Every structure is written in C-alpha cells, then in structure tokens.
Amino acid sequence: MSSPSSAPKLERGLSNRHIQLIAIGGAIGTGLFMGSGKTIAVAGPSVIFVYMIIGFMLFFVMRAMGELLLSNLNYKTFADFAGDLLGPWAAFFTGWTYWFCWVVTGIADVVAIAHYVAFWWGEMPLWIPGLACIALLLVLNLTTVKAFGETEFWFALIKIVAIGALIVVGLAMVITGFQHNGISSSFSNLWAHGGMFPHGAMGFVAGFQIAVFAFVGIELVGTTAAETKDPEKTLPKAINSIPLRILFFYVGALLVLMMVEPWTLFSAEQSPFVGMFTLAGLAGAAGVINFVVLTSATSSANSGIYSTSRMLRGLALEGDAPKRFERLSSRKVPRNALMFSCMFLLAGVALLYSGDSVMAVFTLVTTISALCFMFVWSIILLSYLAFRARRPQLHDASAFKMPGGRFMPYVVLAFFVFILWALTTQADTLAALIATPLWFIGLGIGYLVVRRDPKHEALRLAHAGKVAHERRAAAAYRNTVNAAGLPAQKAKESIDS
Image 1 (cartoon, rainbow, N blue to C red):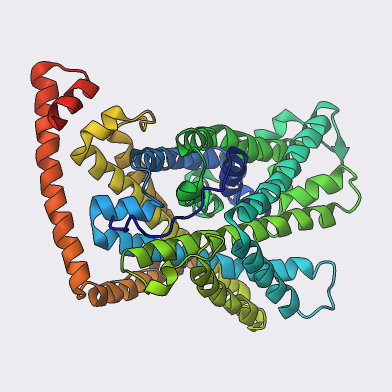
Image 2: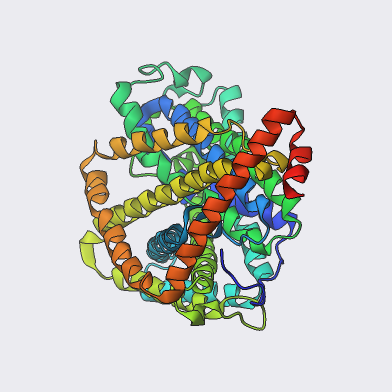
C-alpha cells in the first residue's frame, strides 16, 4: 500500500448504529424478497440449509476481512490489503472488479426501481424515475458520508421491519391453525409434501446457484473502514452478528413462509412475501411489499455508488486509475469518483427501452456480477493466507482472530469451486459463467498497460523486497517462539528489539 500519508483523509463520520445497519442491509439483499420464491420452487424446504451453508461460509470471509482491516488501520478497503499482501496486481484486479460488480448491480437496480415506481404511476415514462433515482443518489452521496450512513440506516430499518412483521404474522397464523382453501398452516408443512429434499440432490444444488446472489454486498462493511468511528469496536460487532442475522432474516423468514402454506404452492415468478400478507388479509399487501422492495433496490444502488467511489479513489492513490479520482471535495467525499460511477448508471435508463430482451440481459449481467463478487471474496481469503504466512506476530497480537485458522480459507475456497460447478447445471447461468472471463481478459490488458509505468515497476520491486523481508522476520519470530517458549507478545518484543 503506497498511499501517501499527506493525502487528504476521508472523514470518519459513520457511527456504530450506521455500521450495524449497513452490515444488516448488506446481508439482506433484494434477492430475499424477489428471489426466494424461485429458490423455494427449485429446492423445496431444503432451501433453509442452502442459506445456512452459504451464510456459514461467508461468515469466515468476513472474519478474515475483519482481522486484516484491524491489523492496519491505514487500510481503507480490502483492495488496500490485497495490494499490500498479494502485490500491486491484486489491488488493481480487486479494485476494478469490485467497481464493475457494483456498477452492473447499480444498473440493474435503476431498471428495477423504475419498474417498481410504475406500480403506482403506470402512465409515467420510465426514464423519469430512472433519472430521478440517479440524481437522488448522487445528491445524497455528495453531501457527507454521514448522509450516506443515515440513508442506509433507514433503508435497512424498513427491511428489518418488513421481515419482522412477516415472521410475527406468520407465526400467529401457524399457532392459530389458519386455513385457506382447505389447507391449514402448520409446522408439518415443512416435511409433509415430499420431505425436506423433494427434488433430490440436484434440486438442492440448484438452490445454491440462485441463493448465492442474495448475499452480494455482505462485504460492504469492509469498504466503510476508513470512515468508521472507533473501528476496533464497531467492525467486530457488525461482523460477529452476521450468523444471527442470517438465521433470523433468511432462515426464520423462509421457515415461516413454508409453514404458513406448503412450498408446492409457491410461484417462481412471485414474491412469497406478497402471497403471505395477502393470505393474512393485509389490505394493499402488494403495494406494501412493492414499497419494501423499492427501498431495498434503492439501498443496493446507494451502497453501490458509495463503494465504487471509494474503490476508485483507492485505485487513484495507487496509480491504477486517473489521479483526478483521488481528489476529495470540501465535504471530504470523492466527488469526481462519484460522478464517474453515476455516469455508468445512465446505461440503466437506456436499457429501460431495450425491449423484451431486458430480463434475459439482466439475468446474464447480474450473474456475471455475482461471479465477480466471488472473485473478490476469494481474494480476501488469499490475502488472509498471505497474512498468516508472513505476519504471524500481527496475527498473534490480534484481538479479532479469524476462527478456524489456516484451515477454513481452503474450505471456503473449495465451496466456491462447488458453486462454480453448480452454475454449469443451468443454461442461463452457464452462459454467464462463459462470458465472465471476458471482463478479466479486458482487465488483464489494462494491467499490462499500467505495469509499464516506471512508478508501477517501482511498486512491484518494493513489494518483492518487502515480501522477502517479512518472510525472514516471520521465520525469526517463529524460531524465537518455538525455541524459547515465549508468549506471543514477548516474542514480538524480542524480535522488534
């Protein structure tokens, strides 16, 4: 990491409540509201195990990211520690890929938002809500980072209230034995219609290829590190609460949905949230859920604008993007980077008028986006393995160690390979899997141009020298610990002296 210490600093304007709700918002994707119907249809009740397994694996990605970010508070994002630990190439590929992930997701969100608004104002031209959304997000992010935090706080709160209401209403229907068309709400609905795995092993596998997309953005809290007050306390608290959030928001909601009515009645084309509230007799259920999904999509786009601008600034500081993206406004936000990212969201407005192929194109691009997120998650794990190998003294001194040590990163990486295989089992996701390498080929060409810069060559040489020095220091540290039986902190002091 080569960011000059004299460069203007981002403002630490995000408080504990902002970070906690941003973490929740990142863990609850729009896919839960809109995609859960399809996951239930293909996997049946076994979908609860799908979400639990994915959440379990990604928890270790978050813990690895947390330990790395807290090992050096000069890290602004995970692209910074990737560059520091794996080399300049990793910062370039991680930063630009993460930017690409959120730009593609943001384009999809803009189109979704325009269609959600059309639910109430069907006669309004779609380009009006599309442009209004982009303008609103730009204004919110140009003010202060606290404005972004406040916006995400309330967006996440809406999602929490909606899911909480579903669980409470659904449990009440199960306990009272609610009946509809001769079918009773009951706990037995979970296993009485073909068992927990009604479509067998391949149906279970099919659930993974859909459900993994719902977790996109879970790492968002890692891009807030440079703007978080007291990160040593707030980041661990946000990360450690992820398993409980997954159990409550995903597993809890889906269990209630499938207890209220048999999973066989769910449609892949309809949000099960709308169906359950309609059964409960809630007036205007479709409008309520439409509002919740609208805020969820807006939250996703808002997060994308925030994170892409911070990644672009980090790339500029490292010489991997134009220097103008490095500049901060008087309000300590990267204005040029924000405007550049928003410019690409305008493609979403154009796609509103691309005809019947919009959904097919969006299935392709959002799948590509999710694949790129998996690349970023993998880079986080590889960075952690490099950290453990070369900086054991920092790991020993850490107050937020990743559980599972060096073993779990390999388990999670193997799980990602399983997901890649699962994506080959369906034609639409296979097409995305085949198309995704085109991004990395283009990025590789861009890196070949960047690395010709003498400054970049100097960065690579400096990194190679640092790696050699750290390996020697790590070996000396381990020898001291093993030979003298010193506690970790004493061994570190001995080496330092």
